Image 1: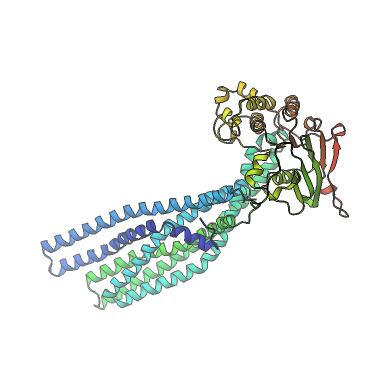
Image 2 (image 1 turned 180 degrees about the horizontal axis):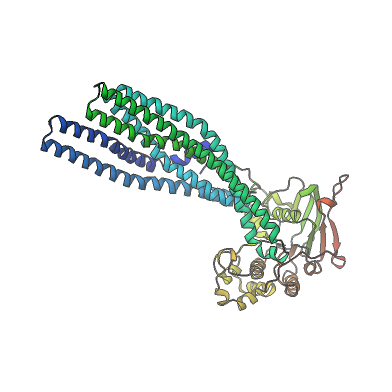
Length: 570
């Protein structure tokens, strides 16, 4: 799916992709609506014929014609609804796949939180798909309105003119109110995305929150965000209700005027009984199509608001750019990592060197700085200033597939893949000795021993069937088994007890001997085993007169630092 130039283009391009289904649904819905429009006409003709000079044969013919009309309109709606549902579902699916491709594109990267992306891939694509289903109904309603006007012209020019004027006034009122609804819909979706994002973060960090006693604070924060989402939803609902109320008022006034005019014409003798029944039946029938036309403006406003949010992701600038020109240095020996004046959050510019084949600890005083460091090393984003060098080669000039096979980053929130414990451990390699060494070093072998079915135990979605400590050990074992030239670990053991953590740190040091390893942590167990510790100051410690530098110290003089609160899980 090529990137559309605007939200309008995205919306209509999505509909045109299912034009066959929409055309079929529109034709069948039109047949259904025309069949319904003919019902009062056939009834009026039947009554008029019976009153004037009806015969059993004529009456039977009229009744058979009415039955045929009902059969046609029933079958048309049945198959039209199927085509409309196909258009809706496929439109949603196409947009979801486009979002997925954009988020997972190697040279892309989206800075939005997972909860926000989930909202755009579910609620927003659903609204665009729902509008696809509305289009066919709107086309049918428009055709039927025109057909009803033509039928009324044969009965009374005044009644036909009243339908035209009433529809024009209705559309004019709806067009003005739909702008307000679009703004309210955009705000509503943004607040819902924020609530979804916060809920996801709370669930994922529930153990840690309980461990530090922060449940009440985060619960109050979630209540506040939820209330904001509710208020935004109410404003959107009020805007939509106003739009629908205006439509109902306009159609009510139209029907009243039609009945008054039809009654006057009948009293004056300009309409027969059969014509009066047909005219009033048509006038009452077209209220439905008029409402469909009026509600389509609300559906379009909401769909356009959602298309704007989807469009923002599809056209977002790439966080990183793919490079194919540079050659990676030789992998025969260990690789060193160097930061040269790399800009970090809070105005910090880091400058330090991680020696090749050594274990280097990165002690970040600010968690945001630690997250930024990990994202830069994983090339989820590129530095705004400065350079990151791998064995003397700029990180941003290396092909992404080569880089990610060389520098493996294991984030703090490492997600496990659906499958078993053994499958997750072997996700990056099938080397038996490497797997055995990695399982022992990370204590993942104890996870295998403790689970009911050993290595065949299912980890569930993202590892939900395992405890926090078990997930961390399996994720660490998976990274160690790959034996990458450079391994970056971000707080790899915050969910295990201190005794186990101390043993894991020692075993990882032994397993990674001769290979470059960076550990972003403030755990004394890890920092005490590093060949070098680099302290990265927080923004509050930065100087405005000169660029603050990272401070490197040796393993023997590793800086004392209080351990972060952690949840102990065996």
